[in-house]
Length: 343
Image (cartoon, rainbow, N blue to C red; front, top):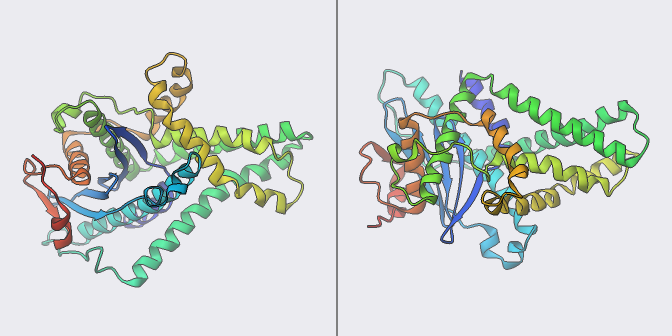
């Protein structure tokens, strides 16, 4: 069990979070182990359900580089920035939730000891996080972009068009097999329930409903701007981008393709932003439906306890009143100082 929870951050961290807007308030989210990470324009928070039923929250300030530097907010460029930032924050949140889950396992039957806060984490912890991000990125590039090239070589496609089409189909097949395979892991099913809770809570926020489990529960767990849909768009966009390069003849030309991943991510990000329009217009709906269907694999119906965790994470990221949740425990004094209670 513990080993599995250590491996989940490596591979599930490759999933990109949701990005949404409401009255110029940007909110993104990602499911983690027994919890949810939510990100606003000024901060991000991770809320995790502990074995004693309390909700343990880490909140830290965070401002995107796209907001700090105007040239990074340009179309397509901003998508590459968001992709990298989401990977870093996602792996960081998953590692945090994994640590909390393992502590709960080790301390079963005992009083949970207070864990190290973000400020108390050592240089080696940060180094480990950096290595984890690099490892996740390398594994993702290897599995989803380099392995399909090797498999396509065995097919013997002659033209650049056929080579890139077959390469793209292999990439899409590997992606679908990967998603199906991880649904077989028991711990991942719990993560997918929190993924559904994340979507429902953000739907409640977007539709001006009260941020309560009872209000969020009837809402859909399928969101058009979900990270699952984003990854599907990445797989499709990559086919058209790589078509421009023709058939790779050596290792150098194959590695050149990897340098275009930020461009592919940026283009895919712009397309996923259009899904807000697409969800309301008949023309776009057929293009959005495959992503929604795929979310049947990556989201499961959450219970009200899981919805509460997602709502606490969302409220905390937005600086909203948490007084209605009596079992919330913040990590360290700095988290309490960050919390702004709004009437």
